[in-house]
Image (cartoon, rainbow, N blue to C red; front, top):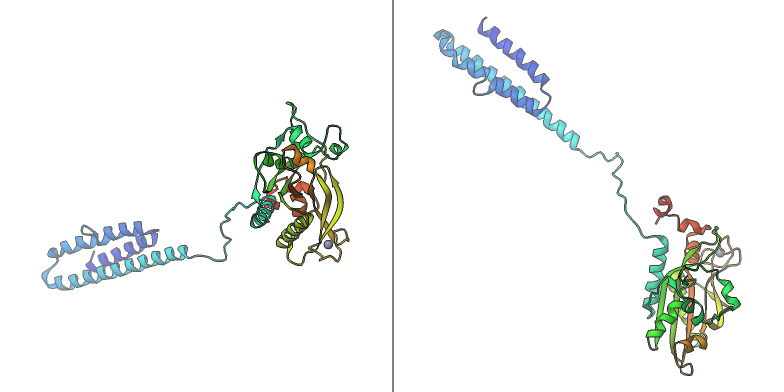
Length: 337
Ligand SMILES: [Zn+2]
């Protein structure tokens, strides 16, 4: 085999293995086999002494050319691998992104937080009470004597030990006043329970925010001012409010408050049943009997109380007509908030 034929054969071999090298690691092996210190080309150079002296120079030149050519092909292949890698790393903005599941506050929690932050700005402290109550705190202290027909207004869950699940947040009034001297200015948020058939309009549990302000010279005008301010801060400054006479055992006089429909601005729509008004809470001046129970001086102190149903306000605001949605924890629903 002539030197020309040998070189040609090495070139063919090299091309084959280069083609089969699928990654830079295999390329490294090819480089060692052919161009390494103990590689094929080095082997040829070490045998140059056996070549006849008159052709030695020419053979040396050819081997150098072969070495240069193989090196060049290797470099090109390396470059190809580099650009393939970059291609893979390149960000494809048309691909869908990774979904990051983020928790959010439940719409009821959000509403309670929003309302409490308004009341805090109006100078109210926040108070809490237990959900399992005694008959005395839930009814009797609030001017519901035994067998009083008003007890029938609220269907009650009784516990085995003679307690009950509170039917309203009003017992927090008595609990707070029993250990605080006036002035008392609190809001009490929390869950309340009613033994009612579950339907689109009623659920066995819901949330209330109770308000109570007791001091010297508190009048109905203070109550009106506070409620008006709260409604403006919650619904917007153009809101109108209306007081309707009502009855609650623990307030006298009592009223229910309607707010102009924030959806139709009073023109009438589905949510306000075309009346232009939405009922949002009950309120009134605290009945002196309630103050007497915890030995407040009724000659000196007066006050007002109010209670609003959080679910009602959230349902009106979100345009929901089935209360059960708020308790089912359907992720598809909750994800919207
Ligand atoms: Zn409306």
